[in-house]
Image (tube, rainbow, N blue to C red; front, side, top):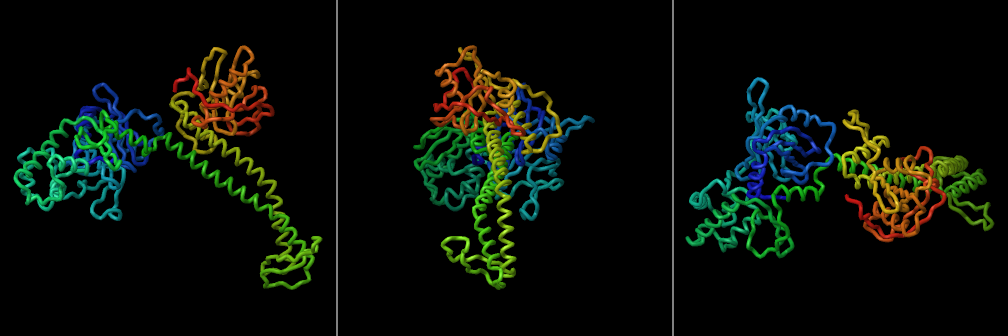
Length: 572
């Protein structure tokens, strides 16, 4: 979400009210370009997110589900200098898209160290820079002279604000002062004058001012009548007054379908789409929708997705190699015919035409040759190709089967990740990925023990339902928890949860049909219709040796086509 400088003044005030006097208790580097500050302010926990990646932003967010367990070197360095500090104020610099968080830290000797965190939200030049005594302590992005001739950013360098054309903030001046600025520095059209004198004017706010002034912006400032000039001056001052009391963000849509964000209600002929109680709320919704911040669970999802793509390429390569084995008999025929005609001289020839004496029709065949080899050597070369392809059929088919199992297993992990709503569930999946070799094993032990009862347990009038959220839970429920006469449900050839039905009496067709609908709901086909669901008794379920978690085989089962249905007693 791109906010102009004037709208960011409202955000700066919003952040200052929430964070002032708060203590930074913990700092996390969520991803390469994002930092999370856990602040204790006014007896409340506040989460401040700063990201300078694809969608640069600073905002107060809801608690994140999954945070990195092993801090980066940058995170460790910043924790040393930042954690325990008090936030004294949050301000906007010159009405530009730069916010500064001022913090103080009390040292052991009683002295106070002041640090300024400059958050520059300027598109591809965005950065978060930590400054002490006008010297850069550290920054999220280092900028070398090779990357930017005008301004370098790095530790121990002097901090300078980004290059600007000496523009000022509209919020710093009275109505009379705004008038004097326009008269003194104004030149060119009204639009050019406003943008050259004041910082932070986006198109939406500029159009608002022009509409309030009854101007189209193309007029020369020096040719405006006194009435028009006073109208422009009054509109700018009124805008300042509105911004000083603004506390929300409204999303409008213009006649062309383009969305416009305003910090206060407007009377222009736009359609109001949504009202956000705070700017942080609007920014967070945009960040979550675009997936700009890669939290640990998002990073895990990316790693699993890449593992799936890699295995798909391997699967295709093996399949293509197996398809090549169709040429096996042709190579043997070429070898036989070349050996039969071994008396011919074919050196330096690229092909030879011979009669197919091994066929009843004795048709003429053109056989490609290697020019540097004799006809016998070419025949031996074709025999080698034949032997190679013959061996490939055996090993290749085994590799293809193993690749198919692995690919299906990776997809089930990715599906399980979409169901994970708790820290424990995410940890189970992460440990499963470690055991599967998808990610490296962590050297840092868990601060708590993973339980075995994280699966879903639903009580129904006829008995109990047990549903696994991931492969580890599926494995436990199916092979250790379930009893031989319990019914097992799973979607056919679709990633989903293992569902165990335990009843005191035999399940009738109506109950089986209902549970099958639940099984379809807890699968990747949740939002589709006519989902095939297999069901059988647990005693018919087998687990092949060395097979991955959650993998089962069965020799007898029944299949039912159902519509997915959410269990009424289940709350997500």
